Length: 166
Image (cartoon, rainbow, N blue to C red):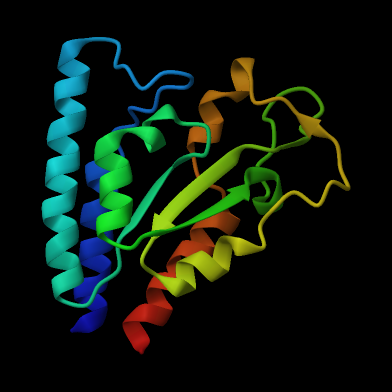
């Protein structure tokens, strides 16, 4: 029963923030409607997060490290209120590759804020080793970097599985 609750809660949280409103360089939405949507989604995320934590589940929140919305007051308050620990990692350490040209690794910086020690520890060592060349996260290779690599999803699933089997 715990496994089902954990999986359902994590899936619900991911769907609530999977809308992708992350603005580089500015925390100002392109229009007032986007800003209103952001505020509503964060309120809903928090409502689900509180219920998840009440039943013993973990809360996870992911955006690119450079996303200006990490500095939004509502996000900073949520991270503090729920005791979320931020772990930063690089896409190149998780097999993120350019789809075009030389298909080099892309050093996309990601951050997860989480209550899960398993999730935090799973990503804590996934930093660029500096032992390879990178392709830039630009042009035709930008959109595909919105997707998670198999290595990244394996870590997420392992962390959720560990929490569900304790």
